[in-house]
Length: 88
Image 1: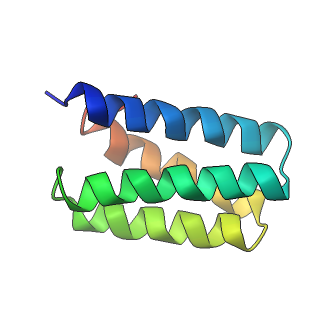
Image 2: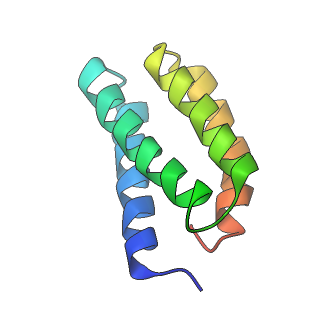
């Protein structure tokens, strides 16, 4: 079972992703990048999932480069891995 702090970080990531994909922009991208970084640190540290952490880094690179379509596709690939840790 995941902790409440991890779930809150994931919920912040999900909200930032929704905002970014609804209206991609610089500010939305910066917020999503920050939230993805927080989630990546949780994956690498508390969850010990290095492959997922690496994929989240790839996701951040897509967001930073202004590629919402590529980021959306990568996020769809990340869904099952995140769900495997109880993050939905």
